[in-house]
Length: 265
Image 1 (cartoon, rainbow, N blue to C red):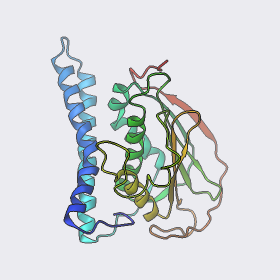
Image 2 (cartoon, rainbow, N blue to C red):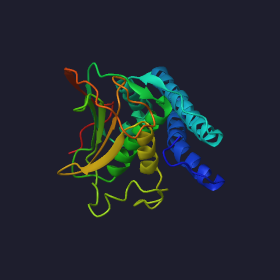
Image 3 (cartoon, helix red, strand yellow):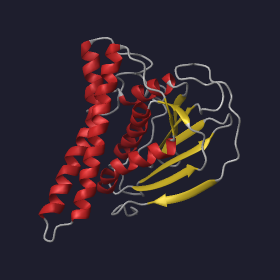
């Protein structure tokens, strides 16, 4: 499941707790929202239906996280499939759309067209994007003097592999700690477990890629990760990824603002 595997029952339990916390929180929030729309006069069945659909999606996310830890214990290899990273990002944003709305976060999506597919585990890479998005939301939760904006982009890198960037306008990174934020059990949060970024980097590394962070000047942070495309002899788990051919890309930029996510002045 991860590049560095937890070995004790307690370590596995902590991993499960961390991985299922986000989808379980989303399930509760969407359940409360669905109930609200159903008890209003008049009822808004469309909004309630969307909330229930998000509950189903986040339930599947939680089940997948537990399944991943179970496979780890059994030492089962992760399923390898061809993935469209853009579709994965769109699905994830739909599942967390209510959280983004509640935090008044505007979302900008810049997904390169005709990206090469990647070879990997949908659930694991989905958890990487989910963790990075959740971190961005949390980093902006106390921002009051500027717009809260989450920007997610994809593009091919110089080797033709797939580069994903998640940017926020939050509190930013402490330069003195930037080299430690990916260490297991290191956290700057009062209630943090110190596992999220470590899990993300371990998953990306297991897919033959890399994950890193930089400041997002003047405010915020940028987390980027690159994973091999299916072009060329790249393989999950390999530490050396052969260069892939580059393709001419046509970028279509679109700005998506969820209902109620008005710009913060």
